[in-house]
Image (cartoon, rainbow, N blue to C red):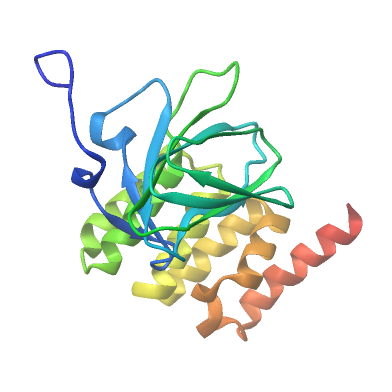
Length: 224
């Protein structure tokens, strides 16, 4: 925050970070301003490109999407919604959401938090930023961010999982196995499901250490 008590920027002046292997262009709002009360981000895209990641919030996170400009086609549960500029889309936890830009230059902002809880910035922000920096060759900055996530959340599988992905893609493969094993110890079923569809593991998919993890997840799912 500036000494004036406020900051102003334009969505196009925010950092432009390709994430999800370039499928999505992230414009960090919360990180830019240092907002501590609520999560907020923007995404920009041209026609036919993804502007909201296809996902479902399963941890109680509630979100409001605002189409700032352009036009987007939202998928909400199993329905499609045409959303021109000015459209507000409120999505409750547990509901699938995704959006594709229907016009060039489309921008969508999202604001979210968990009802009844003090806001805490999500670790995924650092993960997204880390892989974007790594993709541009800034491996030191990327590793610092992912290491920070693991240090702050040592008992959450996501940090160890993404640290393994980073090692398999850019670093030490043996360390990657060490980290994915730790992630699977914390959450075997989730990790096994993610590994099965994650291209970061293609080069080591035939390794017995990976098949042991996916097998463990399958056994966990059967017993559930």
